[in-house]
Figure 1 (cartoon, rainbow, N blue to C red):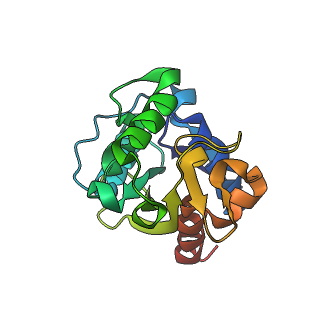
Figure 2: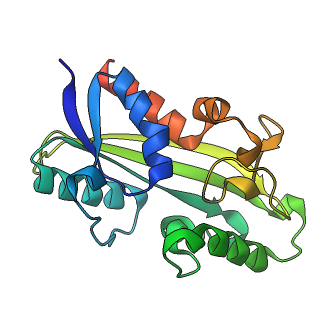
Length: 199
């Protein structure tokens, strides 16, 4: 019988990317939104701290084990921004947030040449067996790339259309979902999690 686990996110893109992979690990995944659980304020100073915060909150509210992902885009030329604030970089909520965040990123980088537009996507995944779990399982994944001068591709979400992956020669938004699931930062963190679980 599969173990029920809460996925501590309200982001449908993350649910789509993570739920089926976690199901392969033997988990019956329930998104926190299905249980009417909101998201806590992210007050951590690192991706790890925020992921633990989110997982603990979901575990407390649901009474189930919880898994959370805190991820973001880290751009060298911007001293690591948008970083922890990737989802709310432009200070906009809702459906307009992604487009506003991308527009702000392009404006901040201006006409910097490609050589100075290096960036990486970072994903930190935390699994808590219960709210007071003193030894959470922590898995991290990174994906190196650079920021394009204009958006390319229709797939994905967030900054995908601006993130060029030299590994595949395309932006993340030009990749088919199945391809992105193989090479993304989240895919790498999930693979590390799988090894730690011995799944």
